[in-house]
Amino acid sequence: MDKISIIVPCFNEEESIPLFYDAISEVAAGMKEQEFEFIFIDDGSKDRTLPILRELHQKDKRVRYISFSRNFGKEAGMYAGLKKSTGDFVAIMDVDMQDPPSLLPEMYRTLKEEDYDSVATRRSTREGEPKLRSFFAIKFYEIINAISDADIVSGARDYRLMKRVMVDAILSMKEYNRFSKGIFGWVGFKTKWLSYENIERVAGVTKWSFWKLFVYAINGIVAFSTVPLLLPLIFGILFTGIGVIFMIIHLITKASLLYDVLFLLTGVLLICLGVVAQYLAKTYLEVLKRPVYIERETEEGSR
Image (cartoon, rainbow, N blue to C red; front, side, top):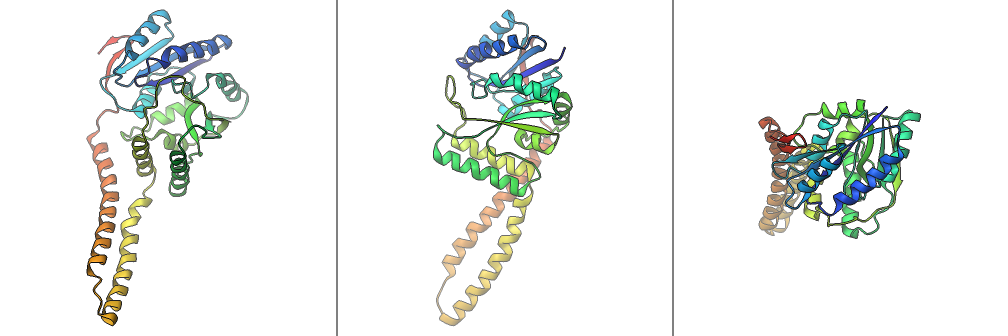
């Protein structure tokens, strides 16, 4: 009998958890020949997320959970769930029901009957999402695929079902600054993509502000590409040439372009320093070797 682990990161999701549990339990009931475990990750929630998980575990021993000592972020939650999982197949799903549990039987059949190691999902539309946010999201996928080795499909969700061999490969990557969409693509393996239209949250509000998504995108680019480190060199060559042209113009016209050039070069210098600082900061955090997350409590008891 195959065992399927379902990993569900949660942050202040007291409204969504019962709805998700009912939905995934119904799917599991229809897959009678498979064993399930549901691993919820409480990412330092301030609402009743943890008490609800305790109650679910008492009612259903398939429910397991990890509660973090503080908010470490979704990436840490997914990593913790992967480490805790014991299934032959492992799925990552959002608790807000934007990842339809009804796709799970099809994903499982694909991995059993076809030559794939993973079945992943992507949104075919972005209806209901602010247009500006959609525009930047699309551009992010275009940029990161152009400058990195990671194969990241536009509109890709974290929702996927993987064979254990792929999960073990992901867990072998121990970096502190994790960007799972890039990791999924970097480790390789054969992946089949399923598309579905964008689904609104079943309850609660999104925890991803535009600023958080922007920082997440920067982290992804820094984690899987060194191309931005070429920017200081490119700008240096470019503006050396521009400086020479300005000097010639100044000699010919006697016009002063000092302040314009000074402001321009200062801006470019700060951009270059900012790029290098991002890589330096990530390197610093990796060298510290801090844990990706800290457990405060699991279904087995407090730490």
